[in-house]
Image (cartoon, rainbow, N blue to C red; front, side, top):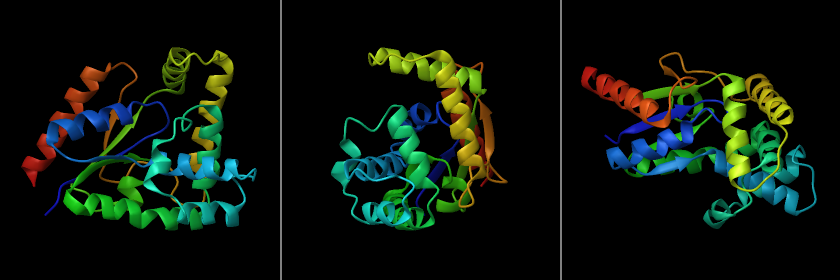
Length: 210
């Protein structure tokens, strides 16, 4: 039986950092499923098309290659917006669903995204939902952008975080929400080390309970 750990949560809550650290500690592969949608969004933008165009987005999702996940332009406001748009398209989600399941089933994995515990792996052994206040997530995103030399306005970053939250939570397909049996970890007042310790303790407790 392969061990699958599903980690969901909104943008900039810290789930990616946490997922990578847990995967390394547990000796499991890691997949940032958000990169799949970012890569599809970028492919659509490369064609000069609108990421909300369902036919184009679905075609690009079916044509996605592993090399697309290594692109250097998968972060930032444009990629965020494109990813959110294509993620709301049912045909895109369907095209990427089997990729994610095959990855996790191969030899277990830690997967992070927005619908891992609710749709991709509803039977995952452990489900975490990592969150933080919009203000704290905007602060982290601002620091991340500035570290990459990208000028950003704090009010605009917060507005983009809130808009993304609304899009993800209200989309008709696989909306962002905690699975009924997910362990919620609020990282607002936690640094990366404290969040990792809390998550690892919950995982060990859940696995010990069977």
